[in-house]
Length: 381
Ligand SMILES: C[S@@+](CC[C@H](N)C(=O)[O-])C[C@H]1O[C@@H](n2cnc3c(N)ncnc32)[C@H](O)[C@@H]1O
Image (cartoon, rainbow, N blue to C red; front, side):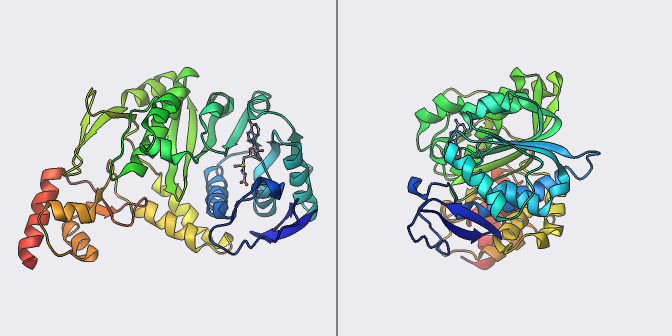
């Protein structure tokens, strides 16, 4: 039976007679819904809409966009509702014929013009190799790895490649063998597992780009709930590609102290190769924040963007509670007191967007421990 729901201001057809309560935080997304629609990914679509709008704001012409795993089409319906002028053509595909039917219905139900939309029922790679595109969306179930060759090779110079991974457990070190097999990433569990997984994924994408004499610049990247999201500017440059790959390093991580050190290679404790550059283009984030009013119910998206904006540039983060106990502090220091103290002379430290008690800092380990010692003495704790 065909039912409809209205989410994110879009009417979406669902092939089910089951009652589904989308107001719940956790909705069970099942195959018998007929259409894949995951409300938890609203923030994913919110941020994507903002990033596309502002990344391409200086483009002199409308862009070609390709989403080879389109599912319900809610993303494209939102784009066509809010930023239709950005696009010259939108190529959408899905391996499931039902998904494409649903996608067409989504456009019909919302009275959106389909003039710019071209539909393909095929494998993602097949659609990607049909043309080159200014912007490519890779949002699969699980790992993006199987789609990256096609996606990177087919994104135009100065175009935007949007990559999602939901196999976070592999990238974070829960399944180190999978990380090695899928991403050639040596990783094990740490207390800043999520950020290191993000850096490992970035490095992997950049190494693939090298095959095509391209380099991937990170515009925006983050961890949110069960997924990673990265927006890369793609540049055609063999030299830049080599430079970015040369910047990949290994790190070692001492579990007890949480100290991270950077190495070219460390056989025993290696984690990497990792991307160690900037995770976000703050100017682009500022533009997204300034335009947040175009997003309905934008609280979560705004909170995430603001935490990305204020995050300091450092590799990994410290779990504050564990750090305090390492520094022999019996009672907890208030987070505000800690940050005020660490930032008293200049901004050195911030919370990590990955973890509510993750301390990112540009201070080196010895400086940090020394300052925490001073704070401890000052407060007599
Ligand atoms: C996670 S969903 C995409 C969600 C969508 N981007 C959104 O925002 O709601 C993944 C979709 O990819 C399709 N898919 C899975 N494997 C595929 C493949 N190899 N080629 C093309 N489509 C595929 C599935 O049928 C499903 O509709």
